[in-house]
Image (cartoon, one colour):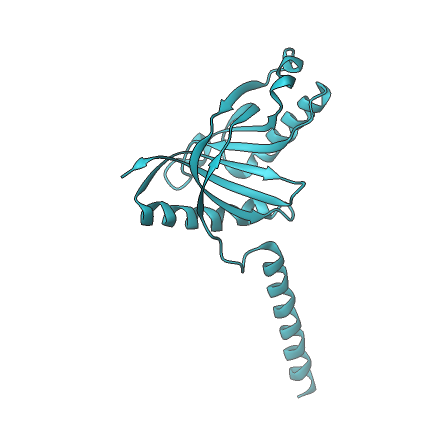
Length: 182
């Protein structure tokens, strides 16, 4: 009987720790999608084709290239062109990069980084806490569900999708540009 009591106590403690961890990670907090103007952004990036789960080293490489060129990235930014539920993992297209100051473009002349401008647009946005590497996995699961529901409820047709990683503020912003009403 004593063993059953201890096993029950251990199970309750593990359950409470797991619940606390999930709360800390943002998994137990509802995500609210909203409309906001986003941009403009100047992005230094490298293109990538393959599973989104293996994209991390590309961001690391871009940040290292920027730093070696004397450019301080303002925010991380990833542009995702394909829906992973509709496109094979090895064919998923994305641009991995960072928001930079326009005046820093000249410093990137000898790098292989590409530059693009994202104009200011009305967008559907969802925020998620950026706590650690698991946030990059948990965030999309919750944010895109909320944003797709918001778009459907409002009758919006969405265009380009991108994510902004603000490590200083500990937040991720998931963004869908609104192209038209359906």
